Amino acid sequence: MSRNHGNTSLKTKRRSEDPMREFDRLPPELRIWMSTAILPWRAKSVQRVFGKALVRTGSRALAIQELDRIQSQRIAQDAAAVWGPNHPYLKTDVRQAC
Image (cartoon, rainbow, N blue to C red):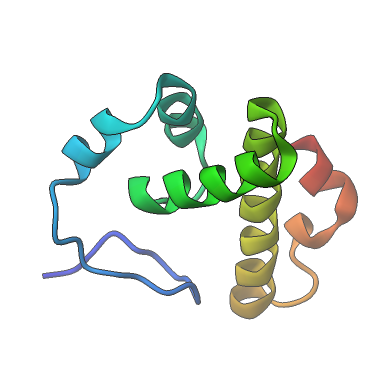
């Protein structure tokens, strides 16, 4: 059976829990962020990154910005590995628009 991962260099993991139940346990702001995320984040990963950023910054808004920054960084890594250094996303003006 084929999976819907597409062409990516990022690691994939099998889920041991119900992903919808994990999603439903997140605070509303993280559910909103995940619903608009470009990458297929796991709820546990989002919660872990958000929690660390929240402790470091003390601000929920800055913690959300940290999730955006990490996602942009991951997309840039994947774009370079899969499509090469000339991919449009690797241009800084495109990443800043996201």
